[in-house]
Length: 325
Image (cartoon, rainbow, N blue to C red; front, top):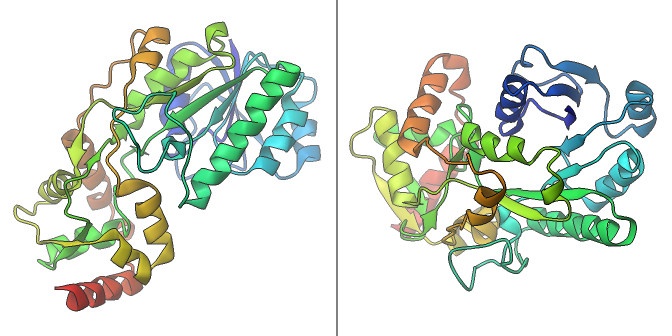
């Protein structure tokens, strides 16, 4: 099986690249070669900038693939570019969308692939919906062989699960209060990238997936209070000081943070993974977040240079807490 990953060394895609190689897939990565993550041994690497289609056409030459996965498409114009680039080059084109495209807030739980797409808050999600619309239209009109995949908050050892990243851990370790949106009881799903990879790799070049949509998530359900406590414990903090503040209030202080919360994380999201299991029977997420949290802290503690504190955000935390407690 010949597969092209556009990207392939990111938070989610790196685990998929590793697993694809383990499965004996002939994997080519096309990227700019700037990632901090290593390329798995056995993968071919082509260096090109996807924003330069002439450069991409040159490095791909006459190659064709059984499947192409583009990990770095975010806007409809990028879809237009890919439709031209890969129309006659692949038997399957996998678009990495986002579970944040689902109705926000959801009218019903658990979320299934038939849940309506409607996110009135977050531009990121609105762009992903527009990308999906273009691809489905291309499938209907031209039989473009698209498969759509919707991850939800998938992480690796480098990704702390909250805005501010290590700044939040630094505050916890110093005994300072940290902000949890709302009352901290909304339900959330965190998926380890190695668990996600089992589902994604199982979709590659699978003819039953053409024209279909799948989300791929963990089955573990946690409240945000639990997530903060798990991360605190992994960081060696037994009793973190959590301060609960409404998402609307946080949005007034920082629009990007607010959009991310109101357009995604402030709402409970539970997913039904029946569909991916029907196509990939060995998909069985097995890495609980407490183990993932230990991996994350081991990575940050492995090199002090990774422990970056956002001074501006740290000050904003103090200001918000002072004004609202």
